[in-house]
Length: 346
Image (cartoon, rainbow, N blue to C red; front, top):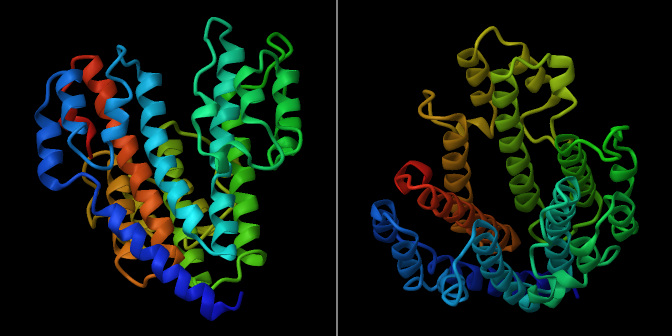
């Protein structure tokens, strides 16, 4: 298939993604959610929304737990992903298949947390996932879900991009397991290493420039988040640098080093905001760093979604739906603990 044909199919795909985006929560619906005071009231509101109705309806027969609600939200995201994947051309499918490797990363971390705390039971029904997610090459999500030992976990992921990262983790002699924080950092670095390599050498479709910029922006925002968090904990710059993602956009290794070595958090913020990605942050720090970064990401990807009709717009929609799903998860947990959801929506 030539690029002209791919471009035509990508325009149709992006148009479909924009239509799906229109089904996400409106400003009025978010205002109503901010005012709810019970899980039941929250679930009733979600049942009226096209994007999240299935999550609410799937939990009506049982008392929803944090894990069950999170899985229901994920299934809504995966359902839209599957629709877009089946509609995509060959080159676009390659990229969409690649970004689903995050599903495997989360499955590995769930398995490791469960093995670290034997009282936990397997969560996440892999049979309920779209076929395109269940059948990713190199691993077995069902085996990961049922793994009971570190060896079983490594075996289940032995053919994936994460195998090398798992093998390189330092094992605690007492527990026979790696530290959860080290595992999360190692797997995430491996994902972004592979994603960066794919964007440089693998994807050659018509949206290469826009897609590469979006991927780099998302990595930059994660690194900004990590830098501000590491500064709060007074991590030594030399050690902190090793915890940042290997994929850089405008937040280069040199910029990260300057921000980590800055004399104050305000100075670090100015250094980061002076970058191309940092311009999406507010001019003056307001609220938590996490809330500022979430706002910047939402603003950036909404703009991408409404620019050119290409694969970058599709990626923007998937990202925005993931972000909205994360917000709904925070609201659900807040309500379970009797807290006001409004504080957790930004």
